[in-house]
Length: 549
Image 1 (cartoon, rainbow, N blue to C red):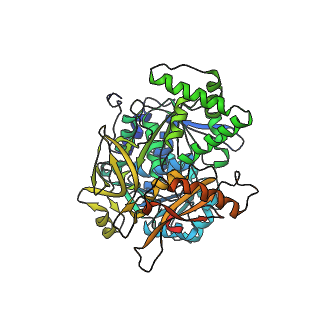
Image 2 (cartoon, helix red, strand yellow; image 1 turned 90 degrees about the vertical axis):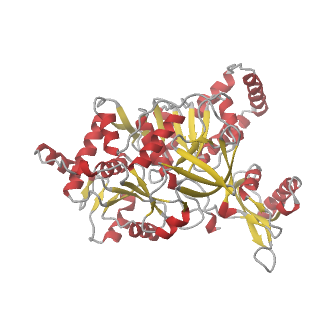
Image 3 (cartoon, rainbow, N blue to C red; image 1 turned 120 degrees about the vertical axis):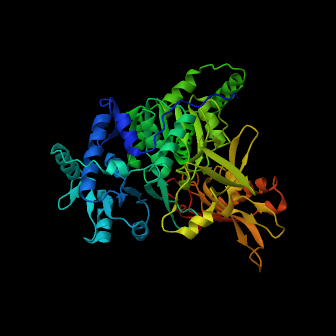
């Protein structure tokens, strides 16, 4: 595996510089597109995109919202992005709210972030009305009777510009270190914390992603914009990389929209790829071609080792059926199976896995197109440094947060000087590739002082045919809290266990886990198995919320 130079990419310090540079002179180039519920394609070019941003931010200034905290609540949409870009263009702070949370959590987030205005979609309008109660401005990201819409604000801003009264002073006050976003952590092990990210941190991170990974001309994403992965890597990086970006905000139409948009590059999470993989093998099994495909993939793997990239029509047909035009998948948010990634690669679809965390805007490392290890989360990002302290991954760089908003004690706890303590446990190999081996808070500590990362066992158990999701944890088995034994909670695959009762499922799983235990030291062996009736509660990026188990 030979090293090769980073890709050439332009870096920006402020959002308005990026927006102006991308649009001016390229006004007719397609920017962002999407499909209606009926499958009709809609979209804007770079000229329309910038015009809408400039007009909207002008009205935000007129309303005195520049420099203030503006909350955005809604599903992925052009209007969501428009609000975000207009806020950052005029020096306001975009507060990105996870609408998948319960109402009380959303209200808590709005309170924590000291918002001065709300922009909402139809699905959360009632929550926003109840919260604001006429005390702060609320605008809808769709046409609505009795409320001021984003489109009305754009028209008002257009009038200001046409009259020659556009604000000339705000631009001078916007600096790279100004807070651009407050984004909440996913809260898999505790409550969500409000992370302050500067304009430079976000934009540098977006360009760093492109420096590592070469993308295609057309990209697709359904990742939620209120998370840094969805916004920085799947929106900003794609726009800076001059890709035509297709967005999706409705899980029911994701597969349809992928087919309609015909992307070269897709950004997603492991759950989506696991679903595609399961459906693919189910189709192959129905056709009675399972053994034949396995032999072909094995043959192709051998040939590739000798530098021979032979095409097989059976593989090409299956690739077309399952992936369409996709040639590159960028995957993050959770651990991805190396076996599935290698399988996709043999079919002609390269999957590059990365690692990020909200406090780092988010990208810390990522595999590259021609430097890719399937079991690793890649090479350290360009403007980023990583070191290990007692196995914990610490990060320093332009992408690191300014802190948690109004939580100085938590900020101090999370930092070691300039280094952010991720809480993740990892290793770095001789080639500089980073590996995530567990989460510090999840470590199971035994009486003998030994420790176990439950993620390693979860990876083994998840390969069992009947298992859809699993969590391994330490269960107190004695009088003292450090007297623990390894336990696992399993949510079975409903399709594969149809017609079986819990006892049948448990009997099969116990037999299979006994086989896993044979390979483990005594203290690491799984002693308890719990079969769940309900799915695990998850974040928008499909990470299991371990603190709710």
